[in-house]
Amino acid sequence: MTNRVISSDDRKIHRRIDPEYKHKIYELYNGDTLRYCYQCGACTASCPLSQLIDVYRPNKILELAKLGIRNIPQSNAFLLCSACTQCTKGCPQGVRVHELMHAMKELALRDQDARDYLLNGFEDALDALAEEIPFPISYSWISLSPPDGDDGDAEFYNTAREILLRCLSGSRKKDTPPESKAPVKRAASKVAVIGSGPAGLTAAWELRKAGFSVTVFEPLPEAGGMLATGIPSYRLPKHIVAAEVENIKAMGVEIITDNPVDKELFGKIINDGEFKAVFIATGAPLPRPLRVEGDCLDGVVDALDFLRKFNLNQLDKTGKNVVVIGGGNVGIDAARTAQRCGAETVRLFCLESREEMPSHEWEILDAAAEGVIIEPSWGPKAILGDGKKVSGIELVKCKSVFNADGKFAPVFDEKVTQTVEADMVITAIGQAPALGFLQQLVDTERGAVTVDPMTMAASLPGVFAGGDNVSGTASLIEAIVAGRTAAGSITRYLESPAP
Image (cartoon, rainbow, N blue to C red; front, top):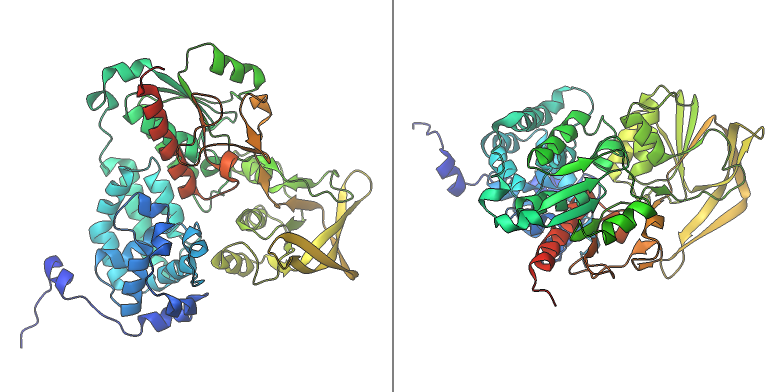
């Protein structure tokens, strides 16, 4: 019998089925929740990425995983999951969908069909993604979670890196100049975007493609928001973000850095008539205060400020013995960054139990593997020092974080404490928007801009807002969707007949 080479067309019909695949998934993270998926579609309905590209349908991906089908494009679409967790939050069965997607990525390290997908179809997927978002390479790099280092199992991710870098260097098709596909009269309508993070730049990109003139105001020396200054470079190389920002600028979007919008400038933007619409996308740059004794001592730093200085090469030094407070992804990033900066010990404390920690499970495991000491169920009681400099921290045991109604209401056992030596304490307990520049011209509620969720329109006509300054801290893909939504609403606003 002669062996026949299966063509790509044949592969669509002769689907390889691995009946043990679902059992392999069961063994990773919370993979056993796959058995509770009944194909209701709630995960797909709540997935931001599903709004952008047709091939990504979480419920379909889970169905193919259960069946063990490994070699048709949609079965490998999990590679584009950014773990925003919206699918998991929307699942009535409690299926840990985002963790299942990551488990599939882990299995893909040893899966030839996943490599084939990268080699034969991934650039097409990137082209499709590039039609919908301005950061296809940055987004995919984060989603693929390439490991730090180069071991034998990293072949899959090395292949992915090579493809992403090749696309970044220019093989991906460029955007058609906006003037060729939009009415010329739109260029006379100028839009101001305040903030150059993912939401702001997505809106600017969409509006420029539609033919409008766009100016972006950014307070920091680099554009890109959290992509440029909040995500450590070991997770997302800075030259990738810089290149994609340059692509946006090359379209004609004006980005003015080192230019914070204060009350005076905001009033001018609103009132002088130059800009016909404004999109507020300032994110959530303010740290939540720790509110314990000693929190003002030298050596107590905010995680976002720590990461920002690291990414901008402004970090003079790190501590020898570092304590991080907070169990979310930002806390994990700060701990792993401190480790890379030369700290001898890094210990992370959080109120939540190990099972309740809000960071992704694989992030916690990676941090522990790198030497970060994870100590859940502890809260800060006081930061110790000589009145000027930090010397340690006193912690108290946390018995529970949430009450019976699921609200944040930590309960402590004051009899159980410990004191830890530290010369740097990094706080990562949440962020808040900085909205003082609005000077009550735009309605806010509980520290966030109030908008119509369907249009992102704020209370002042012609003003729109989206991203973390509306929703609170969210994921990259959610910020991108907010920017797209706002851009569509701004287009309709600018082209609607005058009252």
